[in-house]
Image 1: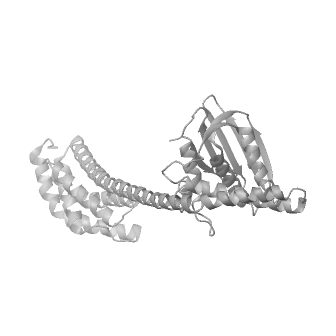
Image 2 (image 1 turned 120 degrees about the vertical axis):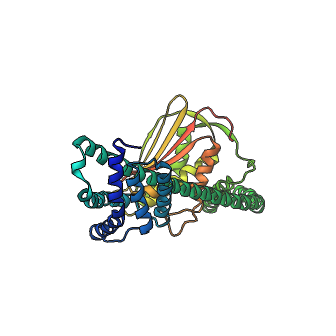
Image 3 (image 1 turned 180 degrees about the horizontal axis):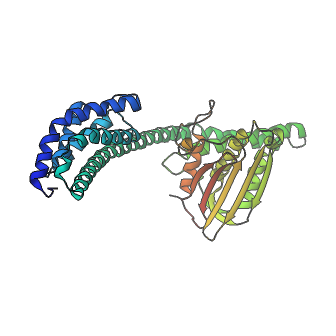
Length: 381
């Protein structure tokens, strides 16, 4: 911006340009005294920046300011200077600038409006230069975040590929022998009719076998190929949740955990064994979470609209930090020392196959896991 009274401002320019090094020195001193550290970029940048601001009184230096601001933004990013610190430094720069420049201005050569115009122009130029530097800094920051997100995405895909291969191998190595074991156990139970003690032992083994079968089936949900018994059929939410309660009742009683339920009956399509795996895992996690409480409470809520079934499993245990909540469903991530970190990722995979969602919301009062399933989906992705 070329200002009015060109000759007068050119005279001002000649008087204050030689003072640029003084501005840099006082600025450095102010930063050292107020912030207890040195400026994060070289004096050459400082001098050039001040020179451009002064030259803007009589010249169009917008392109030069862009280049200088880009260099400053890059320098700040390279040295990981916080934006908050930059704003404090800019305030100290303004102070240093006017501390040096005001005494050198020929006030008698200016009318009051002209001086206000000069001062406002310099303030606007400083503001524009700082805004550009911050803009370039933020561009670098966003670019790094995108690169990190891409890296995390690729790593997660690699983990899922590994799980897929492991799951396919498990399908071949474990499921056939397990089916044979199950068949012979049922034959043994038939031959023990009348021997109640031995029959009860067989029933316990079969119960544990079914639990093992569900665990393996859940792990196999990572396999990209459909599993033969992943049959989607009409399910009653009340019946499904009663099965879950039956599986967990012994542990609830043993650990003195109170279970509160609010279930709105409905029918939906789903893969029964997979959903049992998900809900059982969420309940076991909830029981673990309240383990240190004197008042141990878990709640189960199931409600629906015309299109969506919502299932909430909540507990009053220790809250999950906000920064960890988004990582809970990543493969191999766990907050427990003795966990493999695949339980919740298996749950998410099963819910994804139902075209649903699962999320965690945690506050100091309560931690909730919310599952949302479409009521009318008859096949999975």
